[in-house]
Image 1 (cartoon, rainbow, N blue to C red):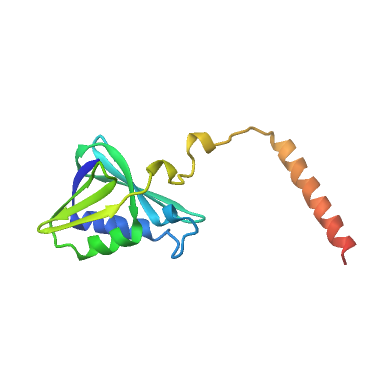
Image 2: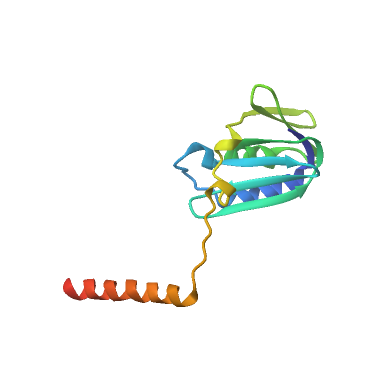
Length: 153
């Protein structure tokens, strides 16, 4: 994975994506951004307990791939970088390298396959139910709930 993007565009995206991440994630990878570098764009995904945000940015793509990086560290780092182009790459050791002007940083990446993406094909379940059947099921649940509530009063 390797791409180059203008610092301000990356900074705005990580600020926006970081807004859904919990301050104290229960699983460490949930405190990370998923960076998915595709044919002509960068896709940044962040997830919290109840929200997921995906942002697609145009970038100069040199090599496709995926990596995760700590949202907090990347956000703080990008915010402090000087204006200009930021080059981001994943090396063979699993480190995400961020270079801008004379600044160079290496951040540890976790396995991108462990990133909890809502709506992945393998976790998606679909079914069809008629309107009348759905309404009947809701009525049954409400009736049982009300009867239970009356017994406890």
